[in-house]
Image 1 (spheres, helix red, strand yellow):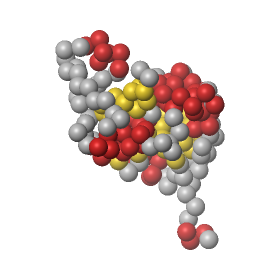
Image 2: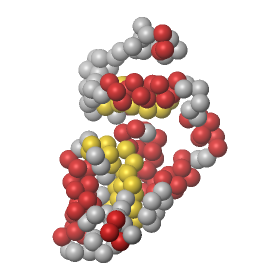
Image 3: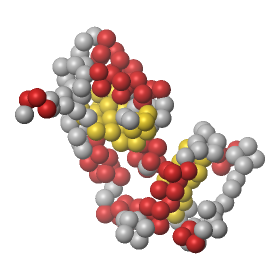
Image 4: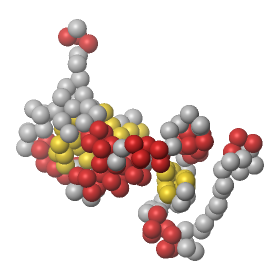
Length: 184
């Protein structure tokens, strides 16, 4: 990629995770390869594992002059304000690894399966696409793991809580349902 004209503004560097464990720990490297996109020494995005299309898309996005710079966005609104907007983006909001069509971990896959079994009307946010949200939401919600399920802006919990509510028959009644095409 570094030899392509369209990426001439991008500086590429390679670090062997095993040779620099302090960098791996500080950056939360759990999968190899992991690509971190940095601007002004701040991580603005990441790609865990081999995913060339996601990497290309993210680099293009951050190179695009029309795309808002993360630092400009941060100046306009605090991370807390951004998180409040995100958890209220839909009446049922799922923060997960991947998306419902392509969950990137077993926990996310399981919670999607539970929500889909009730034909739940929900939106999701892929926390692997935005490290600020991924780390910030843990503090914001005081919940250290993902996935996280929100109803009307309030944290319901993670997979264990959702599974327990499901087993007790408490989940179906509180979830918003997709509108049936037959009802129209």
